[in-house]
Image 1 (tube, rainbow, N blue to C red):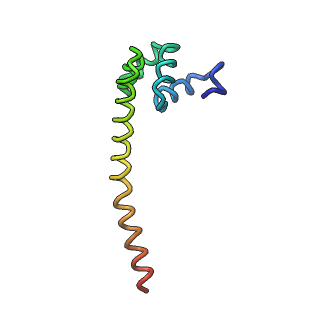
Image 2 (tube, rainbow, N blue to C red; image 1 turned 90 degrees about the vertical axis):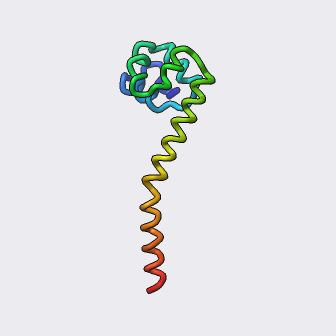
Image 3 (cartoon, rainbow, N blue to C red; image 1 turned 120 degrees about the vertical axis):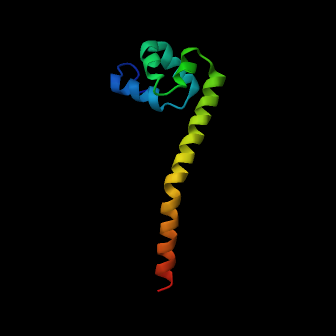
Length: 94
């Protein structure tokens, strides 16, 4: 992010808004590109906290976002883990 800060592409800026997990960096970025931040807030609602520079609310929303992603990951990986365990068990009993 720091290397391309002087001449970032639109694609890079969009990526930063959608993926950045650092409250102060999101606040800084929203100050530099408020219109884009506002338009992307419909896709990532915590960006509205960045726009009003509410660091505490932004930290809370980032934590909620992280926990939601972890829940999705667990739901995805659990059946696969179970299947791998069965394969290992079958292989070791032969």
